[in-house]
Length: 230
Ligand SMILES: C[S@@+](CC[C@H](N)C(=O)[O-])C[C@H]1O[C@@H](n2cnc3c(N)ncnc32)[C@H](O)[C@@H]1O
Image (tube, rainbow, N blue to C red; front, side):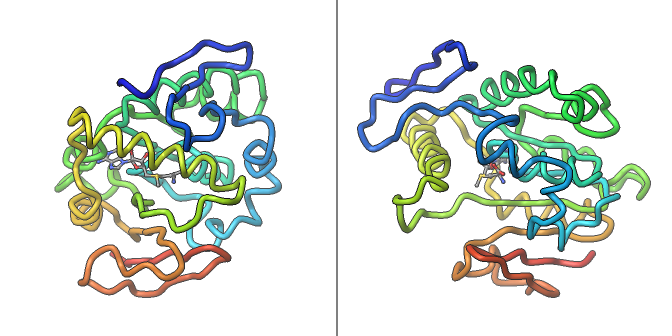
């Protein structure tokens, strides 16, 4: 990883970069700051995600990223399996989970496998094992939030997205992470979900695949959720 390195800091494990284009370091904190605020049980119910996800559902988040959406769904009351395969990300996620254990709500989530489980591996492995199994074993919902080219880099909210984009570029350049393409995950998701597949897209992005068309979409400020009923 020529452009990136891990550093243990008093605030937790951080990813550093020598790329000038990247602001600060990448350090995940589920308890404080904007993310911590959005992840409180009262606040998550106001998130756009809460409008397309049944709060009692068993959800597989196949593209976990930094864990924001997975943890929102878990805080809403869903049972969540989160997959994230990028080798720069899962040590950060595991470290953030450890630090969050001091909070009673997160402690409940992270110590009960029937509420939340993190799989630091390619989602294809998890989804494939469920194809053809009994309905009771399969998730109600598979959630996908595929990478999408960034259009602007200005706002603070986008800082983490700049990092995500840069580390995925690094993975491609260094050829160390042949992740299953998200379109293939989508095909598998349709076979595995018993109720719906939900795909997050930027506002004006095309659908993830030309066909099938989503059964419906729900727009929010910066994007939309495409919902495919199963
Ligand atoms: C846009 S990010 C998701 C952001 C996430 N929704 C959040 O709240 O932080 C997409 C993530 O999907 C992950 N990803 C893509 N393909 C994957 C696969 N086949 N298995 C596991 N993770 C995958 C990427 O590594 C990337 O971190």
